[in-house]
Length: 81
Image 1: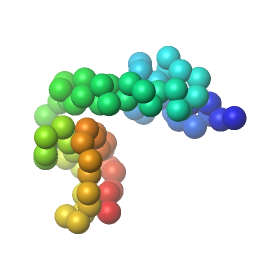
Image 2: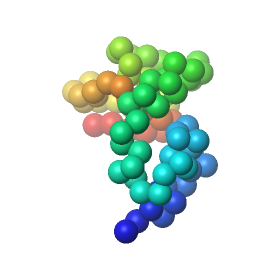
Image 3: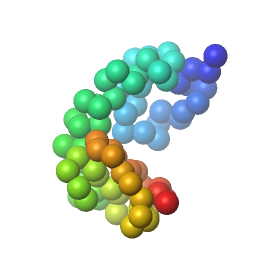
Image 4: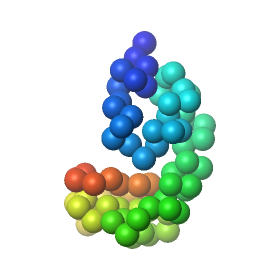
């Protein structure tokens, strides 16, 4: 089975401290909503809250037809179609 370390480079995520507590990705699901809300509340000015509990980095591209359920953080250089 793949572990979090196999799948992700934790040096490139705001959730590093949260994710490194776990071995397998599904173990992180139980608390991910609270983690997103905690991180969203302290994001810098590079992020805009485009809807309640939906934060998007200023370099991200989000299609106007895209549905984004809250809570969500869309990181830098991401494209959502």
